[in-house]
Length: 329
Image (tube, rainbow, N blue to C red; front, top):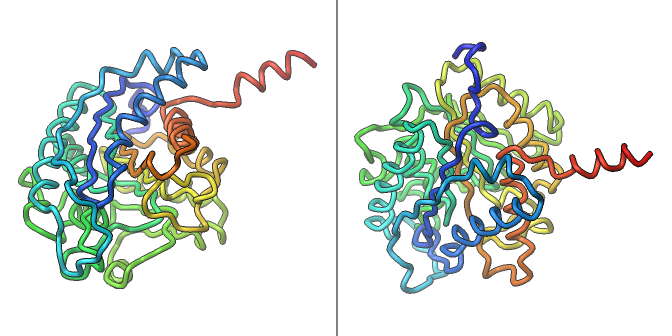
């Protein structure tokens, strides 16, 4: 990693290729499959309303990955299972190809989910385009289960685990590379709920875990700067950012399927995204996942998800107001 490479971080500079993947079979919950199209539409509309042509002009035509529909939502738990494995594997392979192609074309690959099982494919595609991939995982959960220890059997709780090489071979060996990312190149931010298998693995692993209590102890800026410095020193030549909307406190965003109290406020999420966006990490791909419009009929969650994504892509929502206020004084 060289410090003089221009535009290392593609978040606010590169053309953006949105890739919609309406996956609900990883979570077994309907509504999250509508999140991809709703978020894409809401983002574009809000950028037009705010006259942010600098960002909207970078947004390319969206691709859509077909996913087997969720025929029957099921809230029961299936310990030791990998539900809808075939459908997730097929969609993941197609997504990996789309992400890999976008990056090879110099485009920021923006995967819009859908549930967090989509990251199995997006990380696989990102790994094809580099020698050493690093992952920033912003989530309430680690998603590091594997079938033998999973309390629920849902694959959106195994996505990072599969990328690290644990789980069904249909996922771990996707695109003939296993693992897609090494433990020491993974930083998890905002975690506040771990299943027993995940907790044991993390105690033994080289993954960098930054829980909410950790962030409270050292301060938000120090925590994120530590992650940035750690990955900068790792030797990784590409970084994948995976942002799960359940990292936010449910008082900020209720339209997601696995809410956990004590998450990030809107301002904290803005700050995290700005710090990562302004860093010199070689970010080439992003996930934006787990928006479920059906769980927030007000539409407020859609707006929050779109606003934060706009910030990740380069917007400062307070800039115009600040300039106007200063000029009026």
